[in-house]
Length: 200
Image (cartoon, rainbow, N blue to C red; front, side, top):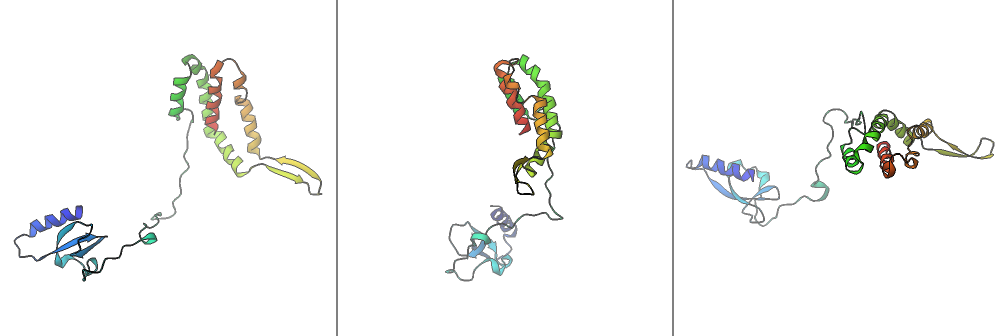
């Protein structure tokens, strides 16, 4: 559409100068002479049309690129190597607006005031400590040692330091104990799963 507008403006500027025009058609990314296909017919100044942009014969159809020839080239960094920076959060609970809005709708205000300090401190701990431990757990999953060096059957489960440390954190934060406490009534499960969402 922009090409047609530019050609029309050029035509108005050159009117009355005895300029020779020819009918051309835009087809499959090329200007072809006298080809009435599904393109928009326009006028173009004949001396400005390069030879590779139109065909000499009317019966020959232009070749249309297909498959991999039509796909754009792979995008890459113009200079150096592109490295995605890891996102960093200061407090998972404070920056999770969707979870906070959900708790405000679901949990009564007096109970929400009681659990907010715990969720706030846990959200900070997730961002600065638990997230790193979780990545280490993914890199070093538990391994079962079936036999020792002497061929004796041991069936020993070997876990990394991060696995042991997360077990300690779960006990410190009371993730398992919260649903069994009656202080928050039926909303104790919302408090528990909010903590689980942070650590996921």
